[in-house]
Image: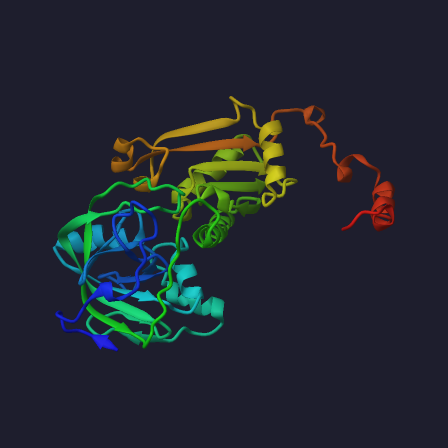
Amino acid sequence: MCIRDSKDIDLTKFPVPLFHEGDGGRYIGTWHLVITKDPESEWVNWGMYRLMIHEKDSMGGIIDPAKHIGEMFFQKYKPRNLSMQYAVAIGTEPVSPIIACSFLPSGINEADIVGAIRKEPIELVKCETVDLFVPASSEIVIEGEIFPDLMKPEGPFGEYTGYRAGMTSPKPVFKVNAITHRNDPILTVSCMGVPVDDCHACMSLTMAAEILEELREKRLPVKMVYCPPEAVTHMAVVSTKVPYPNFARKIAHTIWGSNAGMYIYWVVVVEDDVDVTKIDEVLHALTTRCHPYNGVSRVKNAPAAAFLLPFLPPKERLSGEGSYILFDCTWPKDWPKEAIPKKASFDTLWPKEIQKKVLSNWRNYGYKD
């Protein structure tokens, strides 16, 4: 069914929940795609940006200048006083929203990545009133325009940080020109809050993969990157070989200078003998190898997606003025080899023949694997 007549368009007919007490309204966009196109190229961005219903024919949402939708809107549409067409696809096949909330570089079409992961092109169909394409599997499609100077109050909302941190403020309006939906459509949602939920699991996985790729492209000898979902995408733990002094700072600043690292405010760098996916090993390295003064580096006045950050004072949230911190849990390169403590673990301090004997008899001792 396609609804194009303005008098029949009504977002409130969908069963949109009020997710949290105190939310600014009902959010129809929480697990979806927001599709926009760069006016100067063939770049089409699929992102996941929250959308609150204002009225039956309009929505409000965050357009962060640091995000791809903000890059398009604030750098290319608004300076030319042009409205930006958009399409919202809800209830697509499962890979699309996961990739929409990933951290791909500018200029990369998420539709291509979805096709690569699925090992076949994703089927797209053209919208009714805008020059955009949406996945054919969509349950609901909302399309319209974002005008350069039209703003309305939006928020607050219980966000991915686990707090309702962003206050009500004027934000761009998504004017609705048409709604298309299947019979008895499925409205997919994500009720965000204290971790871990689906948002944290997906974003942490894709963020870690992007950061690992970025570091390896720079030919840095990293072994693994892990973004703990409990840290709401704000922390990256990196294991690496250390080729020269202050190498952890090289890694940290590479992360902070990348697209995927824009949310990483805490970087922990460990030696490659630490499994970054095991929080017990990471905490052990942090509290035994990181000097509480010399091993900590802070960066002030750093760019940040600050609007939703609970730890920032209100002034810094509005100005986008954040901070970064590095915990260097690697052994200093100027230490003599004999000064580096030997880890007192089963695999390092016991002879190999004893290790082999113990492991081969493990079940006989009454233990389980």
